Image (cartoon, rainbow, N blue to C red; front, side):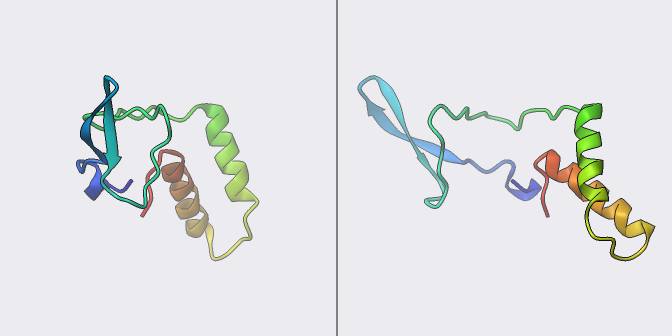
Length: 88
């Protein structure tokens, strides 16, 4: 989810059935998995572990080399963002 949509609702309660709330996604193309937790605010992100950083670095290092060292730095940073669910 990009930053501009962070405060947008992902679902609305449309009623109650059998003592349980009925929830409908605001985007009909979105599939909400059973037992998905819905929060009122974005949850805090945790730093990556050393193992996660190593895995990302290995993935980026094995990509075809294109450009100069700055390209590697950019790809590495984008891979870390992606690990945190941040996309462009």
